Each structure stands twice: as C-alpha cells, then as structure tokens.
Image (tube, rainbow, N blue to C red; front, top):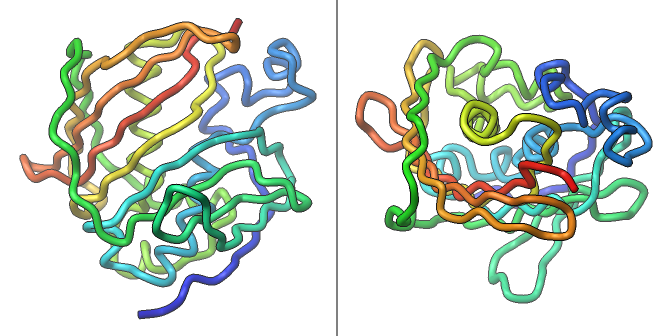
Length: 238
C-alpha cells in the first residue's frame, strides 16, 4: 500500500460558499476577520488528497477521520498538507499548514465502522442529486487528483458540503463557522445519483464564540449507506 506523502496547493475561496457572509471580504470583516475565509470544506478537500492518493479506493469505502478546523485559511494562502501524529490518536494525521502554522487537522482512520445512530431531534430530511459541480469541486478548489473523474465517483468533500447544506436549510440564518466533523465512509456515489440525508440535532449549546450545534447525519443512495457524519458548527457568532 502506498505511503502518505506531503502535498501542497494554493487556497481558493470558491464562490459556492458566498451565501455565508464570512466567505466574503465584507462579511468576514463584519465578523472580526481581516478578509474572506476559505470554507472549511475546501480545506477538508485539501486534507483528503494524501489519503485518497495513497489508499484509494479502500479509504473511500471504509475509512474516515476526525476534522478539526483550528484557525482560518484565507484566499491565496499557500497550504501544505503534511503528515504528522498527535497524542491520543493511533494513526497518521494530516495537518493543513500555512507558513508552518497548523490551521486544520484530519486524524485518519484507514478502516473504521460507523457508529450507531445518536439520539436527538429530527431535522427536515434533505435529498440532493449529485451533479458535475459536486464532481469538479476539488479541481476548482486546487486539488489535482484525477481519480474522481477517472472512476466517475464523487469526491469525499461532497459529504461535508452536503452536511453544510443541512445546516443552511435547517439551523443557520446568518454568518456561521464550521469547526469540527467526524466522517465515516461506507461507500461511494456517482454523478446522477440522489443522496438522501437523515439528520438529528444532538446538542445545541453556547460558548464564548457563539451558539453551537452538533448534528448526526446519515447519508444513503438508493437505501445503501454511503457516509455518516457528526458535524459541529458555530451557528450564530457572538
């Protein structure tokens, strides 16, 4: 099996996320940031490059990881995805670094089982047909992996983007910030298929940064599980 290797790219603030004001210069400044934040899902797309390049297709069907978004990445930042380790995690960790400063981490599981459904309040179900914009998201963001187009499979960042869509449709009304996710891959999906997402609001609580929400999400295609995500975000900034 191929070893993980460091990979670098220049961050791109995609227009896909302009509905969240923090991904615009004006909205970011109003929230206390110097300029527009690159979406956490885009940073996640960068972090998935090393494991997909090394472990595909195994990682896309039964692997996963815990994403932590620690500090913002801004448009045109040079992002180095380096291989490291961390206390409390047995496997490798991919760190997204800007000028040597770690902005996000993805603690990898090469193989993992999705957890049982968590108790919570059901949110409105979401169904999305996968299309070309899902397929080429990584390319537009600066990820040059050809495996998704070659095998006609949607990239793993799709699940995180759809998790954000659940938040947009059910929980947020203004600027918000994605902070953490646990991702458990169970299968692959292809363009043209429809993904159904069943979600439960597990926890809603206040922190100094604002109101947070933790949501358990189950993704299926034609009744077959493809992903489980535990998604956490600040849904209302202080």
